[in-house]
Length: 209
Image 1: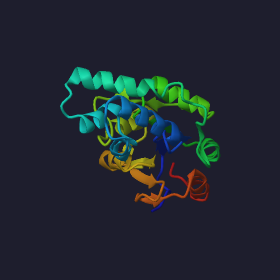
Image 2: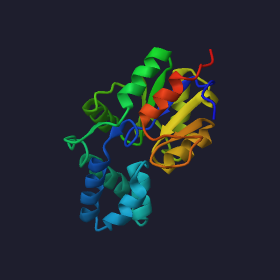
Image 3: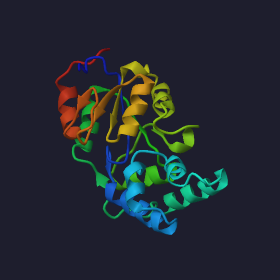
Image 4: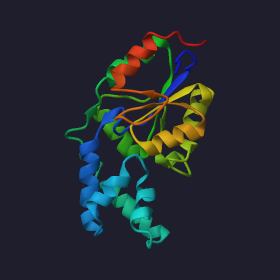
């Protein structure tokens, strides 16, 4: 894959820019106990998806209001659990490289704004453009979030690189028509060991005007 045509980078948050996996898992485990759901089953499908989508899969008998309440409870378990939330390996190196290259970037997350801002703040990251689950009608794997971020940046989505650590997010990026870079051994147009790997790629590749 060539990165010469990249005009913007669109990041997932949890597990991509922010190392929050432990906090996410703790919250889902606590929520699963409260709702009498197998924690293993919850963790198997929760990562990268909006809470309400995951809950509908786990508890299909719930009506819309019950799903909304369960999703709100799940998020409430995460808001103040920031003790071990940090930037992922290479995140700050990559963001510094994007600044030097003049490449715009955005964060597209399945978290709500309160949680996204808390976790990004804990990681020392300020997103110039942030698209949360509250900004879209349908969350990942629907492409709406990535399409919205590209539009807000004023960059055609075909010239955007979506960086993800979950298959559900990679599906969203592909559906949007973006190029994809995958972490954690997943399959994207580019496979990354960490974000410093992407920083090196971008700095060694001339970008299109």
